[in-house]
Structure formats: C-alpha cells, structure tokens
Amino acid sequence: MSPSTKITLNPYEQIANYSGGVFNFNLQTSLLWMEERGKILFGNHFAIVPTDIELIYKLLVYAIGDQENAERHGINLRKGILLCGPIGCGKTSLLKLISYFCPRETQYQVKPTREISFEFEKDGFAVINQYSKGSFVRYANMPFIPKVYCFDDLGLEQTPKYYGNECNVMAEILLNRYDLFISKRMLTHITTNLSASELEEIYGNRIRSRMREMFNLVAFDRDTKDKRA
Image 1 (cartoon, rainbow, N blue to C red):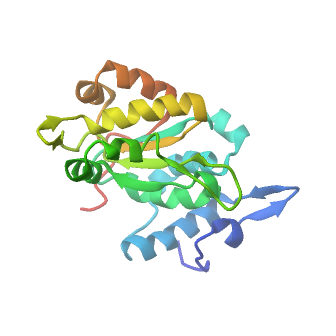
Image 2: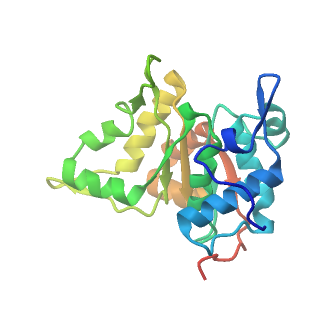
Image 3: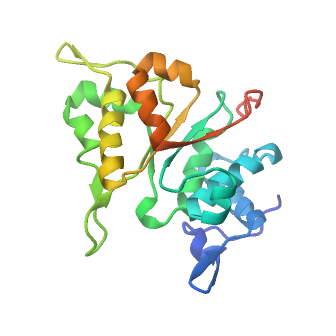
C-alpha cells in the first residue's frame, strides 16, 4: 500500500463518510490508515499482510459496531474480543490500531499482563480492584461507565507474591470483570498465544467457562509466520 492518507488520531474524522446519522468506512481506506498509523507507532517495517485482511475485517466490523456484518461473521457486539495466535503474528499491534476505530467510550488501553503481575508485587490487592471493580471512567457530564481494557499476552505472566501470599492476579481480575460484564456490560479484550486447554490449565475450568460468555474468539491461523523475523 502506498501512503497517501494524512494520519490523525481519529479515523472517524479522517476517513469515515457520515451519512444518515451513520459513519461508513471503506475497507481499503481503513487498511491504508492502519498501515500508515502502524508505521508511526511501530516503525517503517510495519505492514498490513494480505493474509491477515479477513481477520482485520472482523475486528473492524466489531470496532465500528456494524451489526449486520458482525452477525454474518458470528460476532456478538455485546462481548469482548479474545484474539489468539502464535508468537509474533501481530496480535498486540492490531488491537492497538483497532482501538482507534472504537467509539470513545469503548476505546481501550492495551495492558501487558506481565506488568499487572509486577504491579501486584508492589502494590498488593489494590491492583485487582484497579482493573475490575474500580475500573470506571467519566467523560464530561456523563455518568461513570465501565473502562475497557485489553489484557495482552494472557497466560505468560508470573504468579506473583505480596508479603508472601501467592495470587493468580489475572484470574481474580477476570472473575471480577465477568461479574461486571453481567451486571454493567463491562467489556474486556484479551490477546494470548495459548490454546483454550492451556488457559484452562493455568486459570481453571471456572475461568474458561466464563470466558466463553465474555469473548468472541478471533484466531490467526496456527501456521501464521512470525512477522518479527
């Protein structure tokens, strides 16, 4: 793709066509915007790979809330995204870019689970509350709304200790966010290199069962090449 689109932080202002009260996006223009923004964020080596376009399309449909095409691809707009794929396939980069296409109230921070583990070792159980029950935000005069997070590399974090007490921090955060997903429609997104059975081994069947309710599974092909190589 040859660069031609001026990049701003808001694709709704830059590339969307507003008509009849609805923002409409063209796939090719959106891919170009993502590639150019990706080069700014991640370096000139960043590129949209043609084999990833079908997966990116699903993520874009989800982000902009295209109900018709979401249903066509088996995506529930009330759930979050669980993006699976091998190491180096581009999961984190893509979800950082996709966030720009979400409405302001559902844009999210991509937070490595490793960092949360370190935060727990430093600050203790308050960290669990920070990413779950205390995870609400307010815009202007609007009521407080649930804050959306994307937890990056789920399953690769260490089980930390706080004053000698071990805690599976991400399991506790996900359980709390599940309760808030049911009661407050709190959305959560996840990236992981692990399979469902590997996640169950780390977090248990209770978490895996709730994850089925919380997430749309979007997966790279297992043979996707490492783009860092």
